[in-house]
Length: 586
Image (cartoon, rainbow, N blue to C red; front, side):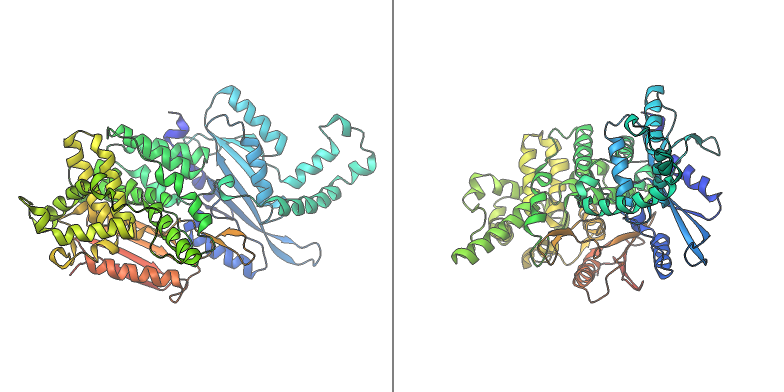
């Protein structure tokens, strides 16, 4: 592992500390949750200054320098901003130059090209890579810094220049031999010509920036939740996870690929005997397009699983809280969180198929598949038997014996209806997990997969809120099932960074950027966890906000932690007004 990988956060912190010593410079990382950044944007807009940057761009740090200048046209004092974007680089990347060129042009939409510079940051690296990066920097006017955290200042291998100055210099001293004979009129007017081209380059950029989020490699997994990984000390696979996160942050690769690889590596390290299933990763993307024109667009459930996983890790890593979970909680949580929405596409495709048959042929209640005949033959009943047995044992202290199928017939019928009729993703995800675990040794299956499957099956209100009277659960006690408690809390809290695709007025697909939630604060203490999520563009009457309030109201009444434990979710609306939801049960 390189020095860069070992100290990614240290380098970011070093860059922040370095800029704190500079005059009139502010730095931002994780722009999506920076309240200060949001306030600066508002102030700049009120002053008539363009100050906006897409918070989902995969940059490592943004430094903004503010100064006063005289307006050439009005001769009045105005506020001028200069943006410097820092990109940490750890290895040779054949696409690096092209990507940085694109980002510079992409960013030209927020400000004149003269106000944006890019600086590549490296630590001590191989001479050949350092030489190549220096050539890229000099050819494109990018900056190149070498940073050592033991020193107070960077080694500037190549100073950054704005793009207009870069064009002006090339007009005076063109690198292309065919342009060596510019006459004196051109070379003496290089600055004016650069200004002219600046305007037209910006116009060209406006016409070509229609690029997909996947191509831009935007970040939806917020930096605040990723940063929690660097503080883990008790989780058995913490070092591997830190390395994976560091590699992702530096390489800025696609997040879906990152999540798939991370879960696969961790499952293998934990010796779970089966490979991590990529079903959701494969079948979720089409749902964004299919539901883009629906009244209720599709919301991400894959990146969501990973962020739920990270949030739960921060909780079980706490020394005092860890004592309250089972000894094998690391593996249990990895399985549970990474699989809890795995079958969501089955539920959504079934809903769409029913709608299609009903509207086009007038045939109601026909979905993608009739699985009633497979309920017994496909061993769904035997897998369901595991769930019912462990459910009764954990929540009612009742170990089923004898002809328990007859005794628990209402519960069997309930799950049968959920599986074959509604095809609810909670129960289908748990059954999918158990069917895959059939090939594992019995001890591993019973000690890990069955408990995880139960937590997955119960985690949605559609299940725990509708259990038959004979086995109804009025509250879920932490003491009875800490794994299910943790999943329900983290699943409900994780509302940020979940892309939604919806159609605009002309039918073109676009992301829903303005109507989401952001993570504002995450604090884990020995007594529990406090999560604050905010809706920067939602008020209390908006549908998304109302649905979240209803979900939190129900969860607050249902989850019952141990005495002295506090699990809190705070919800803020656009105005900053907040509501606290304290999990106290009843």
